[in-house]
Image (spheres, rainbow, N blue to C red):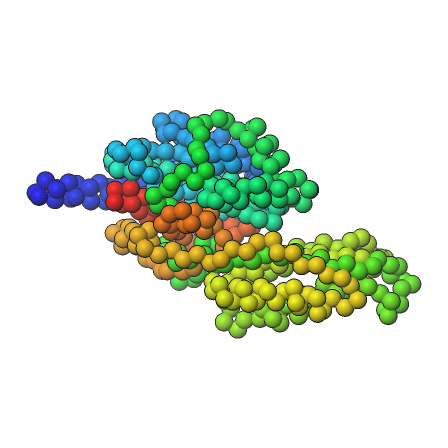
Length: 428
């Protein structure tokens, strides 16, 4: 009994010392190294899914793993797993990570912070000489940001968690009519070969660190966010078809102006989705007008809708109204509404957020609970295993923007919380 008590005390002391092994200079330099791949003139990063720039970022990540002596595996969708073995190597691993790709002209922290925090956690655990029962892995998920081109994001984590989706995912086409299967094949051709990982290989626990991408932590002066849920997400494409005509000679009574119809639909949808409590998230982020000429009445107008809500009932009720409102307000034009995505909310409960809380309290950081308005790979991995997320503040909540920024203090704090959480979970 005395031996067991000594062992627990020694482990507790090691955990306390491990925080000092999180090397903030190394963490920052690796962010700078990654930010140089696809760097933009305004200080952001343009590293699109499946691109040569993303392949280069993955090669750099794998070179760090190789230099450290960590093992690496990759599945058939390009998801990369870097592994620090546990004392019981056959146990399912504890996994942490995020994505290396970015939005067009995106920021330097979205996604890649979670990857580099996970890798720094592995190195800090290694430097502290801490043995864990379970292996711990840092993962890069493929094409998390694919929604900007393909209309659907988190492709890699979806494929890993539910391989039955793979045939459908592979056929999705981007705005240049290139299917996912072609873009993925090109990425894999430009990729170093490592060990093979099967889809849906078991994961014991999953933890994802990320910048908040919202203003709440900064506004409330909190260092750590413990994420309670990821809200549900539905997205749509609305295609309005009218008739092109001469802007000077076509009278109003004979016009089938697709842009006017699209604007009327949008105006009515804004009324339906108005929310005084500010919980609803409704965005029209893209619009394409054809023929897009000053002296021609628009013959077609296509726009997308991004709708998010934490309650499944509201997600269904309001989302189902979009097609109805579009039909009722198209005027003389034809309209087609296609649903691109429908993901239900997911709650993070139980052992993972509880362990994150314990780590935060032991390290004495300020914290708050909050939901995620953005989608993340954790949403799909939570279908396989207990999962949770750690948020750190970002400047003014700005994300998907070249001005995106986070402080080194907060990045280091989040990494320390992550490292301690991973060790605790790996030794359960």
